[in-house]
Image 1 (cartoon, rainbow, N blue to C red):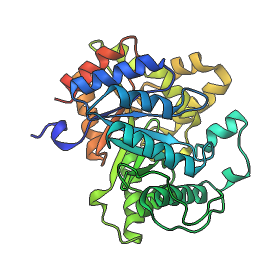
Image 2 (cartoon, rainbow, N blue to C red):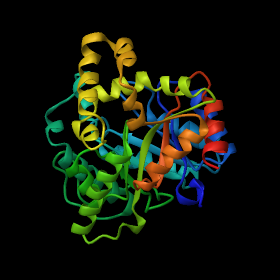
Image 3 (cartoon, rainbow, N blue to C red):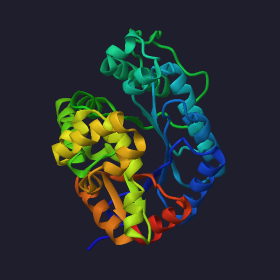
Length: 337
């Protein structure tokens, strides 16, 4: 039987709630352990993904580097193209670059404006503007984002074919990604059931555009918690799961195969009881659906299900617990062997 390493890439997605020095140290350790790629997110008012990614690029030499996803409503797509090309140069051509509209966050932060009413239109336009600047393609003038057709970067990018990803969630965004993007990064609490459904939506979009999916990259965050103590590793997922079951779009849970009553109860618990009580109350079955948690053998078997569902690179996300470095070692050396 082939190993996971033979079937897919191993990535990690490092949250932006840790000091930059810790993130850089984990990225360097991941490189030493043979992890294929590290992804840097940008969530709410946490540390900026661009700055952290630049620090990781400067501190590493081999490991693939992803930024995902950045919100085009926060940065004009022209600036996104400039930053992508600059960090790709800094990293020696190791960058994968993701964008996504993150409307929920903008509304929660009180920073939404009229543009967020058309997230699909905005994402399509952002992709085309970034591609135009990176690849020298001629695109039409912008509508959602002011942009002059024929604009170009004032320097030669390291790679004009720098891969562009979309942080897609619903059917329309996934199908559009299959038509226009180079890859999709699925977000929080991805399950094998949802991943399988999302892959079908991407394939539908690609077929509509006459595209061959053989070069398309289908990846996703997977909540991973690995340790020698199975019960402790599973328990460590509870706070993150309770938060995201409450806030994700319904499509993420609807196609997961989770018990609808357990989902409904979790969604009531967060606002009614608060984060700590909601985490304690979370049904144990939801850990089985939305995470890869437990001892190394448990996590390996679970990640095989994600790869079977179509993920070409499960991105181990969160790594909750007191010792992220040890969790990373177990993941790289015992799970992904």
